[in-house]
Length: 247
Image 1 (cartoon, one colour):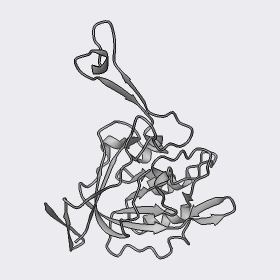
Image 2 (cartoon, rainbow, N blue to C red; image 1 turned 120 degrees about the horizontal axis):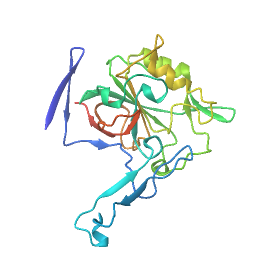
Image 3 (cartoon, rainbow, N blue to C red; image 1 turned 120 degrees about the vertical axis):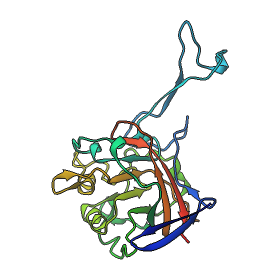
Image 4 (spheres, rainbow, N blue to C red; image 1 turned 60 degrees about the vertical axis):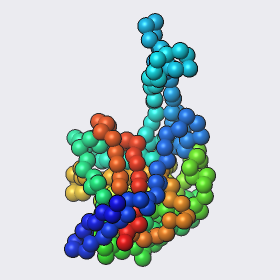
């Protein structure tokens, strides 16, 4: 199916049969992980009257899943993650299809840190006025799908980089990193706050999506983005990230 949409008077079209799924799902083992948070836990309901497991003789499977969205795969978060926003992910409005720009960057080594700062993205523009930006970091190896990031001081965004991205008009930031902030920053979360807060007020329809994986076969450029989130009343939820080449 071909779908057309318009951004600031410019028409784009996508073919829904040609898509790439960038989502890291929640699995029973070998998940990506960060911040020393527990791995996802799966269990079947059972009491004296009912067994929710086919393998144990029950009539149906009734499985309970317990996990931290921030540490167990692709997730999307709102301002409530870092400030007392007064709204949750249930209130965030995300377009069903939006124009997304994909770029690839090499974080800059500064001492023991690897940073995505304003210098790294100095060539970034947004003449198309896309609402979403997706940033792939290199090296971009398959281990990112399963890596345990805790204690590794992964790359992060500086506030000057976030300010530039925000000033260019992007509202939805997607990255393959576990967080846009430094792993150990004494609780400042400066990059998150730079992104979510404007004039001391949290912005409701602004999101960050972390732990995506963009295969090297996907070229930098413009795409149609379907970013889908479940209706769960919290600060961050597991999400689905699908892209379509623009024609």
